Image (tube, rainbow, N blue to C red; front, side):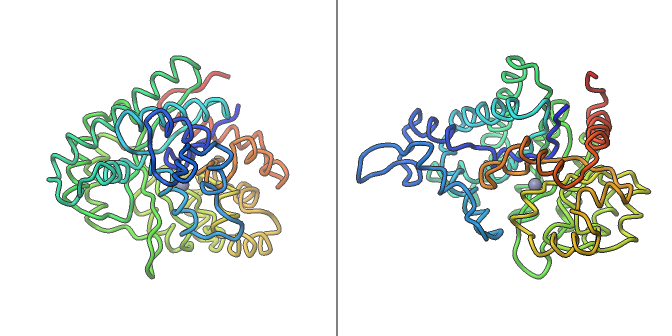
Length: 350
Ligand SMILES: [Zn+2]
């Protein structure tokens, strides 16, 4: 059973989906529309702009995300993009979790519609702008699930960019009203500065309030920062850690992960693109790629495609890479089933 347990909606807008949505909603942004030729670009023409160049970095990745977000011109356009993303993930897997960065999506939509999100009162931001987006994404999930039967869950991500405490707080209060339709919370986001994986105290406070309704927490850590970042993250008692591969720099951190039964969500292509030097150093030191090395150390691991469009990958390709790296595939599936049951309270069919 192929379970993708680390995949982001914003990184799942394929060139085909974006080309179609741009035409349907007449989105004449230069990303999608060639003004000189007076026509919309084809999926093949869009692909290079939406995919990270070789040797790209976190900024090159983020630039791809920003281009895709240019299609967030209305709730209906976001709903159409979400339906495409759920359908494509269902075709690529036997079950998956999709994460949504609701704050970023809402901020982007307000800006695209000519507003200034900082001028929007926090409760209005949450109730009138963010809630319709969340409901549209959940409706897209329900529609595609009904049509395909593929198990699929949605996780709500909060970005550590943490642009506005009052807006995050209002967003959190709104989101928990829909807790039964979500599987949990995630902390994500790329920031610059000396601390690449910060956990702002006010954001942690908001998370802890939301966790009364959405207890299953995952946090991106041990990717752009080292094992210390994973140690700090473990203090929040997450059930999953996004990436976390740099835990392999510290035997003490690995022991803590094993003791706590925390699952690492490993995304080989993403790591290869964003932290190639760190992955090479780990592979040299451990005599194996991060995923098999973590398995051998006794850490529960699942596999993810992370952001298939900018990273030009699929879940099936990640599985091929895992197989080639010597991953224990039976154990990988057992860990994915274990994690699914942990976060949903229900086992998947055999
Ligand atoms: Zn991620």
